[in-house]
Image (cartoon, rainbow, N blue to C red; front, side, top):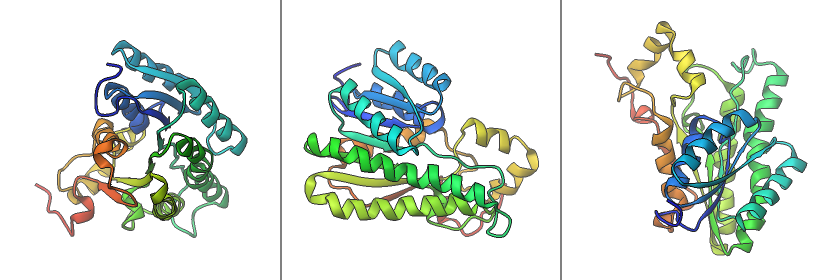
Length: 262
């Protein structure tokens, strides 16, 4: 696998790689020939991700730490660059959606602050400490995970998450403008519901699923591997003229007015 594929020779930092979209993307990147630094707060999920990559003949290292901690985030970037010989790609994907995240009146201040610390400040820090490594490499690609709710309001309130993801999208655009002439591209993905364990557990409740399904033109949620395919494209040289863009990947939810269920 190593040395083949559209990401051959790329060295990628992927946060939130212990499960869900991050794990699927780490596996996809390795399959496309990239050397991967898989990063997560907990080691358990990383072991499974690395096991799958290595079983397929890919190349990856596992690093644990909190990307929202500025000291640890800076050291994670240095460790990843040291292990891989530099960095060409950042996929800033780690995030949380906390219990208690509701409307502006109902959401506790501590839920608001922790959500913004991880989902927005964490992305800022990863860019702050990751961009110098991309500059040393002569350029690269940064993909930030925003959300469908960065583009449209949610009928089911999650005000802290929505605000954080909106900030990620705005920040991505501004960095794209700032670094365009330095050969560093910045793009944001805006997923709708994805079949992570958390979402699957929530939608296993028949009432919760039935309330949401009529608004899904494709009638299903995404698989993490489907999101990983878009990230791999944006990280690759095939996307060499794409920067400052927001990519909805939501099965048509943001295009729908009302969908009548079958």
